Amino acid sequence: MSRPIAGTLAETWLRHRDLTRLTDLPSLRLHPDCYYRANADSPTETWPAMIAAVTDLNGALTGVHRTWLARDGKGKAPVAMPRRAMGDLLGHAVRSGAVSDVLAAGEGIETVLSLREVMPDLPLAACLSSAHLAAMAFSPTLRRLYVLRDDDPAGDHAVTTLQARTQEAGIDCLVLSPRLADFNDDLRYLGRGAMRAILHPQLAPQDVARFLHPVTH
Image 1 (tube, helix red, strand yellow):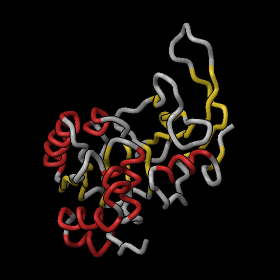
Image 2: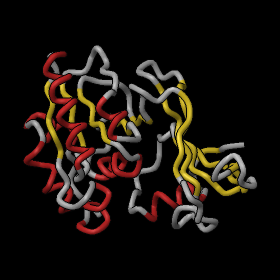
Image 3: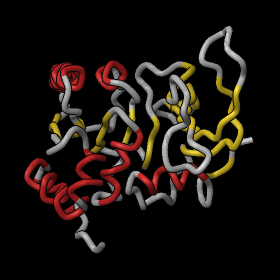
């Protein structure tokens, strides 16, 4: 049975990625003994797993993403594929915050949650892969989309696709580029102050005042 992440190995895992704003995240839970099989012929193992709810724009559950964790929570489980998703994923996402006129979307859960450290009020969507990011569904209230670019060819392709789709839909599309491979790397290795400085010039001016918080730790 899964439970909220507070005080669990899922919280340990996220804090090990330097993520500290972990309240009000109902989309994330911890299953202490989640089944894992490498393939149909492999024996069943159990490992703790962070369970992420994939939902549509109305909040309906469409799928589940699992990150199997080491037994101390400080890394991924030593299995062949520690991340797996199932269900209807295309167009949907792991979400944080209510649907609004502004949204930031990216691939990985930890990468997207990194923005919460300096922009805690910005609605977020983790689409779980570059292909799913490129195909994300747009809320009818959306007016400006920030795309978190991963520094790889697949990430660049997702950005190009979303730029074309948002232009057709009449939505402003701004690309947020990390200094390192992704924003979680920026957070972990450069710190919150540097991450804030990286984001500031890439944001629409009105969103600097609305979303970008001063760094206090």
